Length: 372
Image (cartoon, rainbow, N blue to C red; front, side, top):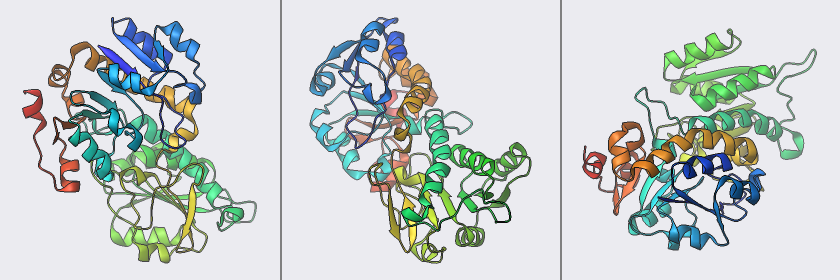
């Protein structure tokens, strides 16, 4: 199979889908890998390193898309890439379709076989290809949240760790998944007062045990969410329903009740955001103020640390990419139920429940597509 690795063109996206080591993995199994020149430069991965690994470097993205059977990317196709989509092409990347109707329609119109990293799911419900980016985004959320609280950014001028004789800042984290737990670790390590909310008591128990009780764990319900959000200096939104839009846990009226100059970091913005006041931003212009609250809503947070993120991503995606290349479609999905859950579109039809529900589109069960 021919695997294509184009350069990411999303604004300020410096990650790349496959490292030179990953290329070598495909080459060792007799596949061909086309890499667009400069694809790895944002992650400090040189063209020479890709050549040494056995990749064929090409000048244009158009050539990569046209000649490849499987395209591996980091982010969803951008508008400029829509004309490069074609029937039968296998696209393997983060898609977050439930929050992006334009991309969904483009994949359907061009009959692309689209497999989303973020909906590949193990039997225990965990998301192995979302986990590394969620961990990085969670750690970054406290870093960028602390920055958002600085006075020059419109924040309250709060130091999360406080100082001798001065109370530390209050951080409220909605969701105790991978991102929320990572955020909790960093925030408590900085000396902040931290509360974390979730609907799953087992997750809350895990966080409390891991941090030795240096965190307040609360069941997520309307009363607790309102109380913690209103009292917080920094709110981290890290709720997730795999493949579906994020629930709007924070209403505009609740944001209006927050402290003036408080900060909200919405990690869930990829899936539409968990606050009614959230809208996508970029690393170049990451923040805006709404209801006197500083919002940080960058849709590709891990791209700000691309070297770390690229290696973490490839560590997770490579084995699945190899399985698709080695067995082809639909055989790879038929043999691997975890991988099969990543299928979002096929031959102009939606195959994921969350995407179909988001846009009220007809659903074709993935079992019909892959023949199991």
